[in-house]
Structures are given as C-alpha cells and as structure tokens.
Image (cartoon, rainbow, N blue to C red; front, side):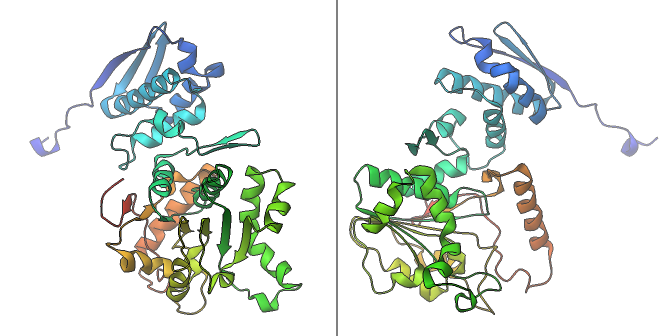
Length: 356
C-alpha cells in the first residue's frame, strides 16, 4: 500500500461535561417526561448524552458534541429565564446553531420575544429569521418580508398590526392582496363581487380570527377600523394613522407595487409580504416584488427581510419540500422554469446596507 492509499487518522471521540446551575433542577433542563432529552437524542444522534445529578456529559465526534453543547447551553439559558424547556425548543436551538444569521443571538432571547397575547395564546417568533423580521417591522416604516410558505410572514405582520391597534398607536388596519390566482380570473367566478373576492382574502380573515374576538371583527370592519380589500381598492388613497399589509406581493406588477407604496401617509407602517418563487402573474409580466429592492436601494427607513426554509413552521416536510424545489430550480437549465425564481438569501438588511 502506498502512502497515498494509507488511511487517515481515525476521527477522535471527545467528551465534554456541562454543569447545570445549582438554582435549576435537572428536570427543568430535561423537559416534562424527559421530552427535551429525547428530542436532543433525535437532533444529535451522533452524540451520547448522559445526565447525572447537575452534570450533563456529552460524548462523540467533535462537531456533533459542539452542536449538542450549544443546544444544552441554550436550554439552560431558557430555563434560567423562566421559559419552559420543550422538544420544540430543542429543535429551534438546533436550527439556530447552523444559522449563519445568528450573530449575537441566543435562543432564549428569540423565543422570549412576545408579539401579542390575545385570546388565551401568546404569539411570538420561533426562529431567528422571524425575530429579525419582527425587529425590522418595529424599526422601519416599510418592511418587506420575503420567503417561502409557512414562515409566518403574513401571520406575524397581522399580529404586529393588531398589537399596535390595541395599544392605540394607530387608528386602523388595512389588509390587501392582489386578486390574482393561477388559472382564474375574477370575472369568471360565480357570485357577487364580495363573494368573488372573499377566497383571495380568506388567509387574512383567518389570522384576524386567531387574534381578536370573532364577534368584534364585523363591528370593527363596519366602522372602518379594519379593512380587508383587494389591491385595486387602494388606488387614489392616502393612508394615514394605519398599519397596512400587502400580502402575496409577488403577484403585483411593478406599476401596482409603486401605486401601493405611494399610498403611505403620516404615522403609518407598511409591511409587504410575498414569495418570489410563487408568481401567478399571467404571461411574461414581471413581478413587482422581484424588482423593488433594486429600485428602493439606498432609501432610508425601508428594510428587506428574507426568510428561509429554516423559518418554516409547518410540518417538517414543508421545509424539506421548499429546499428540494430550491435545489431543482437552481440546477435547472430551463430559464422559463426559473423566470420568477430568486433563491432566498438568509439575511435582513435595511436600505442603508447594515445587517440587523
């Protein structure tokens, strides 16, 4: 056997010990019925984890042990801050370890960030990307939330709008979407105009019903405090003292995007959400969401937040599906198939170019 064929050194198995602070019970770190410990075994199967008293021992290859150590330290931070340690927290900590957006962020700070408490539930970001998205909405007049399905773009924006309304920071919420769907046109749908429009706006109604007393929504809509309408209804208006959300913005043309953005009035906040890989515009029309960042580059008080498959909070297969389609689109040589594609970049920036 030549030297080129000689096997390299065997991977080194290492062992690390972490101390659980005396003021915490080991059960606070392991989770109810050891669910956190079981989840840890699932996300770092290459590492042996043993808990004895107030000591956690990790044994395995260095990379796997480092990841397990990060997760355990995150769980200790969560328990110290009074948050319950769950299997979901383990999964989020594991995702945060491999997230190149995480500079200076801790899982307990991400999960402790409350957006809205209403109807017996607390709405908060569950990923680093979602936290950065919420931070951008709070600090910018106009925020673009761009990312795949299931990342909470619309839901979190509605939650922020409801919070500002309940805190009397604004006088009304305006929710709008372009009435475009693959293979359908409003004129060919049955029913009155409201019945034709309703299916396009249903996701916005669903989010409102999660956050407000359902009996109060018709009253608020009747008074104009909450308005849900197609994008065409925004033309010619100036929207003051409002929180305005444009959903499914990938289905706007550049002209429609300009029309919407120029509706901005005083003491108002705008959030624009969309997925540039899901454009339903007919023919060869360009999506306004695809070009808007280039157009608005250098303008202060506008932020662009790109969510990624790591921020998907639906069934775990949704994240896998999104990533698989992303790989397929990048590898495809058919430009027509990729015409509206723009692989998501995992960062949040303001138009100043500073990372958040």
